[in-house]
Length: 324
Image (cartoon, one colour):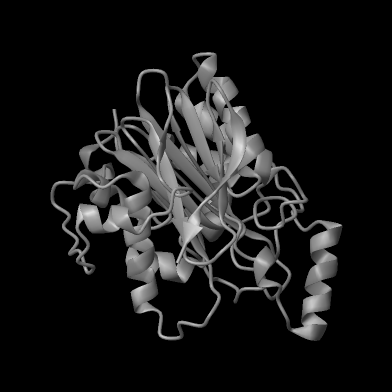
């Protein structure tokens, strides 16, 4: 049993709304495409196109009655192991000095959480984050301490800089330009098992060519990921600084607690982010997805182009969300 101090006490945390939208007003500005859909259990949803294989792997575990954290871990591994996904795990874009540094977090049905940040040379940070949650009295380990912890539990050091990512980094060093469309694809995965219990996880290599030492929202509980088994769960992808400043995933769950649907709650959180942005023409991206206790799911994004994968007993496909 986890110690009480390792759980996130929900009843004592209060966020002011910041946006005066009634339930009816929020619902009225949603398009048909963005409205929530409902699924039977089990179900898995995950950010971006790499969410399709991730949700499939997670659903296969869940449909066979396996542990939901195993399902989360296995689903996220599909992205962490794929060098073609240049924003997660092996093959992820390095920092400005050419080092691949990884962040991840995980949260279970009981409110326990674990995360790692600025982790080098370990391919599966989501698995290390789970060990932090299950084997320590801490929530987060960072840098060299996180790596030594992983090695002490049997993980092996690996070179995570793929040839393709190295070539792109060398080109960036010369040109100092970033294709922003390839710079935000954190994988976040939420799932509900056959008994209606909710868990989630997030993994990323962070912003391409970031300053050494930079950590984004992915390992921050309440920012990139939040789970409340009584209400639902949410996760974020995109520019981590915007997500951290708005504690977006916690906000989404709190809005669902107030009675908003997952899509409505995500849109309110995106509106909160947009309100804070000084340069409204900046094409930064933040995408949010959420699921509630009834199996309703949805998402919303700051800019055009965000999608997420869904897997349940009847489908495994990619869905587009609406955006501001």
